[in-house]
Every structure is written in C-alpha cells, then in structure tokens.
Length: 283
Ligand SMILES: Nc1ncnc2c1ncn2[C@@H]1O[C@H](COP(=O)(O)OP(=O)(O)OP(=O)(O)O)[C@@H](O)[C@H]1O
Ligand SMILES: O=P(O)(O)OC[C@H]1O[C@H](OP(=O)(O)OP(=O)(O)O)[C@H](O)[C@@H]1O
Ligand SMILES: [Mg+2]
Image (cartoon, rainbow, N blue to C red):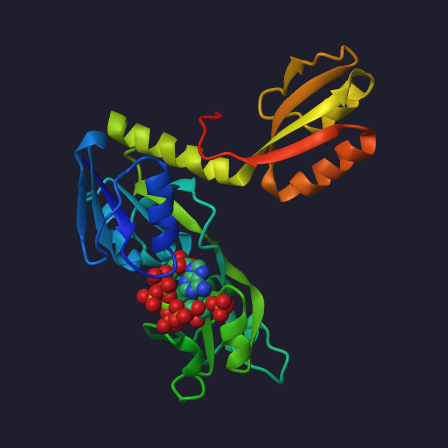
C-alpha cells in the first residue's frame, strides 16, 4: 500500500485535497480524520501538519507527500521534488519597519524573527552575516512591535500582512514557493501505485494550466494560425463542409490564451472557443 502525506489544514490543504480528488482518489469525509484508506487505488492518505510532512517522507516512513517548497527546504529533510503543483504560491522575504531604505546587509547583528529559521540561517551564512534568528510559530509580523525582533523573514503572498503592520519587504525572495509533491531523496520508487499517483496528479496540474482551443480557420491562413497554436504535439485538423475552411483544435496555456484568441481573431479565424480541461495525459 502506497503511503501519502497530505496537509491537514492551512493554506495548502484545500487545493491539495482538490487535486487528489480530481485525480480520482478518495476524499476524507471529516476534517478531523487523520487517515483515509483508498483500497481501490492502493493508497493510504495521512493528514499531517504541512510543516512535518517532509520529515515523514525524508525518513522513509511515508512514500510521497504534498507540502510547500519553502517548508520542505526549511525542514532540512532528505526529500526531492517530483512535481510542482501550481497552487499555494508565495515568496519568502525579509521585512522591517517602513521609513528607511533597508538592504539585507543591514541585518548583521540584528534579531530576525521567523517561522523558517533554517532558510534564514542559510541565507545569512551565504551573505557572510551574523544575526540572531528568533523562531516563532506565526503572527511573525507583530514581533517587532512587541520588541522581540528588529526585522522578520516571512511568507508574503499579497503583501497585505506587511502593509497592515507598517513593514516593508526588502532584498530578493529567499524562496519562491508553491505546493510540491515530494519523495525521499535518492530512492525514486517505481511501484505502480506511486507511478499512477504521480501521473494522475501531473495530469490534473497540467490540465489546470491549459485550455482547449477550437476555432474555424480559412485554409488561406492555416499556416499562420497553427504557428500561433502549435499545441503540445501538433494541432488537430478536421474537415468542414465548406471546403475553404478547416476546424482546428489545440491546447494553449491559460496564461496566454486571451492573447492567442485576439491574434487568431485578428488573423481571420472564427468561432474561437476556449474550454476547460479536467485532466489529461499529455506527456
Ligand atoms: N498567504 C499564505 N500564508 C501562509 N502560507 C502560505 C500563503 N500562501 C501560500 N502559503 C504556503 O503555505 C505553506 C504554509 O502552510 P501552513 O499550513 O504551514 O501555514 P498557514 O496556512 O499559515 O497555517 P498555520 O495557521 O497553521 O500557520 C507554505 O508553503 C507557504 O509558502
Ligand atoms: O502577504 P499576505 O497575503 O498577507 O500573506 C502572508 C501572511 O499570511 C500568513 O499568515 P497567517 O494568516 O497564516 O497567520 P500565521 O502568521 O499565524 O501563520 C503568513 O505567515 C503571512 O503572515
Ligand atoms: Mg501561517
């Protein structure tokens, strides 16, 4: 039986559950359940704190886990990313009171509060700086006001928490994070339940990042149109009753699909339709 760790709460839990459910795995029926058995797929799911997941997977107790890249790195556990999952995106930034221009070099000798002490220590060491790292569990933004720190290093998503506490981020992001599927480093498993879960999850993630585009295309502009929509392998063409036209179908990245639709319309394509893909095996 494949043993898979899933976030039980927090910023990653809902999206992780969504992806697994879309990939055909059993959902838990109660948010207090810590395990769910899915015998049809040969998987047992363990609902754990996202911070702990890399430790279980790195120690070999569990085979795969969904967690955040930043959490996995900070844990120091011997794990590798198998897939990036495209949700729970965040940056990890230094921040300090607004009103002065800060640079990472200013951190030498200061007290830095964070929930990710290892990420911060590694970054300070790389910069050749010595500072006191103060480990807090959360609500890190308030720690300066409360007098236990001079600066912080924290997860920044929208930036609202920093603004509300009159803090400014500075320096590059220490870690650009998102949800990731991890396994133990050095021993990529090859059992069928594992391969199936990875392929299914990859199919759902891929499908979330693409749309299916269909359009009617005058044959005279077909060469130019398929350059705009090359698809993954190659676009599909289907004959139309009017011999001067052909129907084209291709997958396009969600990020650019509006531009692609504009360009196709400009070129003379008609009936340009974009539809969601729920899952795929496109690789
Ligand atoms: N707005 C956000 N706040 C916190 N974590 C976020 C956010 N957006 C994405 N993440 C990611 O979610 C993971 C942290 O999840 P975790 O459940 O530990 O924190 P949380 O959602 O703040 O819950 P908790 O209240 O238990 O601290 C990290 O990988 C982090 O990068
Ligand atoms: O840039 P933002 O969109 O404001 O998001 C980032 C903030 O959200 C999280 O805190 P959370 O609300 O989870 O509380 P916590 O600090 O107790 O974990 C995180 O720790 C940051 O504080
Ligand atoms: Mg939090």
